[in-house]
Image (cartoon, rainbow, N blue to C red):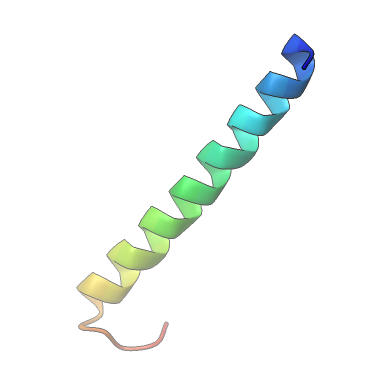
Length: 35
């Protein structure tokens, strides 16, 4: 794989992890209430 491809993959993974953590944090703070 090219270095550019790796950069893209890493950015996508980070975006997914950030979104997941944000969603989990929101659910926890809201008391498991759908946002």
